[in-house]
Every structure is written in C-alpha cells, then in structure tokens.
Length: 251
Image (cartoon, rainbow, N blue to C red; front, side, top):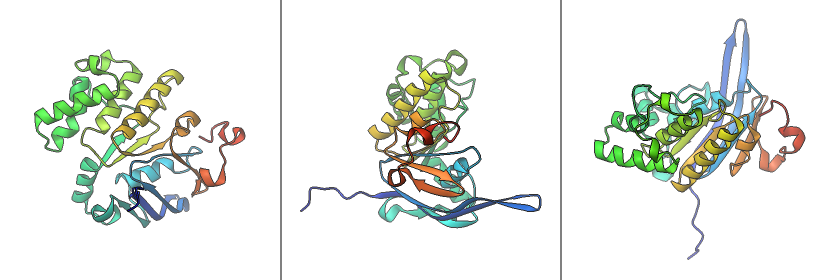
C-alpha cells in the first residue's frame, strides 16, 4: 500500500461565465473560468481593478449568481454544486461551509472581540460553551488572547482585521474566502495579518482563497492565479511573477 495520501479536491469551478449589462452594452466579466483547488491548499487570485476577482470570489461564496457554469464545493460524497441550490440552501452553505473576510472588518461596535467571533456560531446554533471555547482558541491563533474583552473602538486597525480572521473560522468552515483582507492596512500590519491568516488556515487544514492587489500577500499562497480579460491564468505554469508583472496596479 502506498504511503502517499491521495489529495482531495475541495473546490472545482467549471466554465463560469458572468456578464453585466451597462446601458446598451454587455460587459463580459468572466469568460469561462475553470480551475480546481485541493483540500487544505492556499490560493491567491490577482489582477487589475475591475477584472472580476471579487465577482468570482462572490460566486464561489454564494453571494452572487453566475450566468453559466458550475461550482462544486466539498470532497468526495459531500460535494455539492452550489449553483443548483435554493435560496434557503445557499444560506445554509454560506453559514456552515464558508468563512468570509472582507477589506473592512465589519465588527459590531457594541460587542467585544470575543463576542464578535462567537456571533456566527450563535447564528448557526452552536452551544454557548462550545462557541466560547472555539472563539478563545481562535483569539490565540491570531495572538489576541489578551484583547478578548476589548471593543472594536479599543483595537487598532490591524487587530480588528485579526478578529475578522478569527471570526471567519469559528464555524469550522471548509472554505475561507478573503477579499482584499489587507487592503485597508499599512505595510507592517498587512504583513502581520496575512501571515496569521495563512498560518491559521494551514494549521486548521482549511482551503483558503485570497483576492489581493498586494504581491507580498499573493506570494504567500501555495498556488497563484492571475485574472486578465475574463480569463484565469495559472501563474505557476505561465510564470508571470517577474518584477515587471508585479509592478504597478496589476495586483
């Protein structure tokens, strides 16, 4: 028997097409996107502003609909095509299968750091003690255990985003989707938050997809894609990560 453990595909995107109507014109944002990501893999998607990175991430997360194509999430028998789900089913999918991190932290100002992390667990019906234990463990992951009882106004921008990272994992989702998670941070805090995000995802065996303009954040991922003219380029195969490609606003 082989000692090599077979990798499982966690996400498979097939022929995703997305168009937007703009007056009399139709904008073809995504033109048949195809890729797959193994369970526990970290991936980054980069590209120019307006290239459709966030749209693609929102489709994977069930926040936006596609005009064509399929999105399969889950390994083996648990795999589902989220495009075929009802509104009720997609809501359950977002709550239990996916953790979201956005450019803005969206913490509730009247809740402490610990309570903000626990909130998705309460909504999902997890017992209070279990939610507290998990939230405290996640605070340790992002090195904020001494900030558990602090309110967002008492936290720095970087600390707030670290709380958002912890909150994304409280329901033990299979997939973490991060849309410009360091976009509002200075370089020092961007480095701290991105390191903690990747480390926490890998430690917990999560599949992570990060949309980012920051080349330093993208380079931390084990696989990288570049979205251009509605098409997704595998950067490992095409090797566009030279200094010229990384410069300017392409990320």
